Image (cartoon, rainbow, N blue to C red; front, side, top):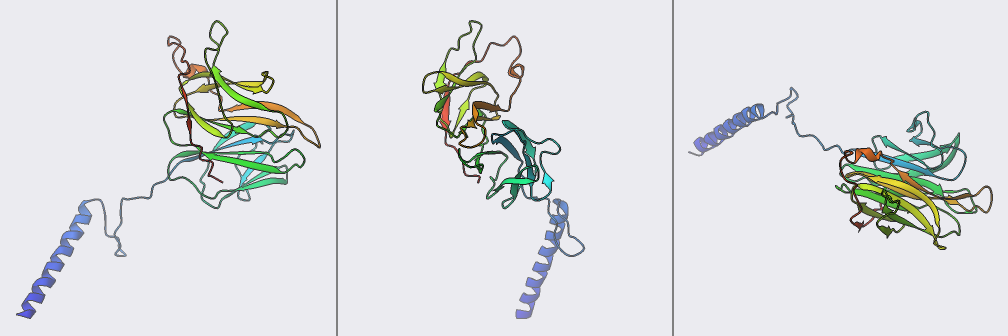
Amino acid sequence: MKSNKMFACFAFVLSWCTVLTESLRHTGQHINHDGHAGTFVKALEFKHRLRICNAYPGTAAIDVYKGKGDRLNGEAPMPYKTCNDFVTPLKAGDKLEFKIGDASAGTFSVSDLPNNDAVLFLVIHRHDTLSTAVAFESHVFANLLNAQVAIIDTYKGTAKSEPRIMDAPGKGGKASRSEDLRFDSVVAVNPGVYELALVGSDGKTKAKNSLVAMNRESYIVLRTGVEAKQGPSYPQDLVVYPKLDPSALHSSAAPRVTMLSIFAILGCFLWA
């Protein structure tokens, strides 16, 4: 009696294995010759766009290398106050080396990466007013519908100024609204054409630039310059990247988009 039960159990298991094999065959999986089941499930791959800015004051341009020999910027070194986007595979532990000619200016180590598509921002700048040492600032932009703007102060010196955003002047030549911004913060803005300014403690404008904001784009606003104790000094300036064509916002028949609101987003300066 026990033998019959064991035989019945074995027959059931054998039948179930046969059904499972057929099921795998008909649901897109297959049995390889080595006995392992293949699968159509693949690991997610995220697109990380690397955005690098050179805010290190000087006349010499910078090259960016991933590892020892992969020069990201090709045959076009990055001059002072320029930014570039690079689409390159990155993983935790990768090192980005910045060089001026054959001399190393500094190395940035990637410690962690987000599990989603993202723009990874990195800026190299002067560490202080006395030495020629470099420093880095980094940020991971969130994946949002609104245009995002990261405002970063890389200026080294005693001069004081604050960033301000306003509507681009209309036909009358006057901006309708103006709001103060804070350094080391990220804000979201509505699509539109804006003007940015650095306003000194004396109330005078020290530098200006324009911003064309479009949904799903991430922007960098940098205060650059150095009041060097040794070597040449560079006045404070305002860098905006990327620079887009205003015609991409709307057709010529559409009304001008004005600034409605700016709301702060918690900065994620954790990619370092």
